[in-house]
Length: 392
Image (cartoon, rainbow, N blue to C red; front, side):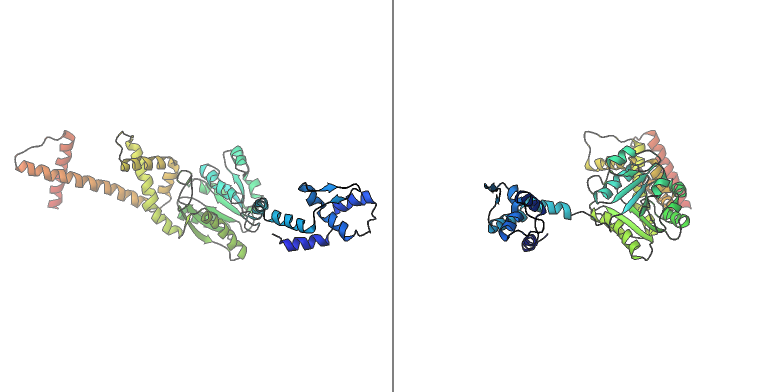
C-alpha cells in the first residue's frame, strides 16, 4: 500500500489529463501551456472533489474546491477507510502465487476424485480431470476442466498426474495413458489404500525421468466431509528429481494437505502396508462381518452398539472392490485374516470352556442344567477335544 506522503508527492508532480482536457477546451489553453500553481491545484483535485459532492462552479466555469489541507484530510480518511482495507484484502491475499500454483490432472473422477478436487480448487490450483464415465456437468460445477479423451488431457501438460482409480484398475489405467504426450519430468501421484503395489507398478511402467509420490489420505468423502483437520495423510517420496523446481513441486502438492490441517505422516510404502493391514483391513473386515450378521437398531441401543452400527455403515459405504483390493494387493492382509479367524475360534473355545467347567461342577453335585440340544452337542465336542489334547 502506498503511503500518504508518496501519493501527495506524486500527485503534485503529475497533472490529471482528464481535468486538463476539460479546462483546455473551455479556456483555450495551448497544450504546451503550463497552468499556474493555483489552477494546477484545482485541476489536480477536481476529480476527487466532484466525487464527494463538495464542488461548486462559479460564473467563469472554474471549479471551486476545498483547500489543500482539506484535501489532505479527506485523502487520509479514504486511505484509512474499511472500504480500502477490503479492496486490499481482496487483491493482495490470493492463496497462491503463480510459482506455487499447480496444474493437477485427476485420473478417475469418481466420488473420491471429486471430493479431493474441491480442496485443490479452493486453494487456487488448476484442476483437469478424466474418467471413463462422463462427469462433464459435475466438473463444470466444480470449476474443473473435464476431458473425455486422455490424450487431450495429457496434451495440456499437467504438472501432476493424480491417480484416483480403484486398486484393481490401476495397472490398466497406467498402461492406457499416452504418457509420451506428457512433460518429461511429470510427477505421478496415487491415493490408493495400499502402497507397495502402486509403488512397484510406477517403477516398472514409468520412464526414469518421471517423479513418483505415493500417498494415502486416511479419510474419504464420509469421514472428511466436514474437515480434514487432524486426519492422517501418509506419503512416501519414492523418486523425486534433484532439480529445485521438482522438489518445490512435490512439496507444494504435499502442502495442500498440510494447509487443510491433516496430520502429516511420512513413511515408507512397506511400513504403510504393514500398519494398514493391522488397522484399515481389519476394520473393513469387521464391518463386512457385521453386515452379514444384519444388525438393526433397537430402542435400547448402547453407545458401544451405536459405534458398531456406525462402523458397519462407514465400511459398506465403500465398494467391495476396495475391500478385495485391500486383501489382494497387501501381502500382510492374509496373515491378519488368519489371525482374525483364529481369534474368533479362541474366544469361542474360551467361552464354551467356562460353560463346561460350570456344568462339570454341577454334575458332581448331581444337579443338572438343561441346555439346548445344539449347545449340548458343542459342549460334548469340546470335551472330546480336551481329552484328545490331554492324550497328545
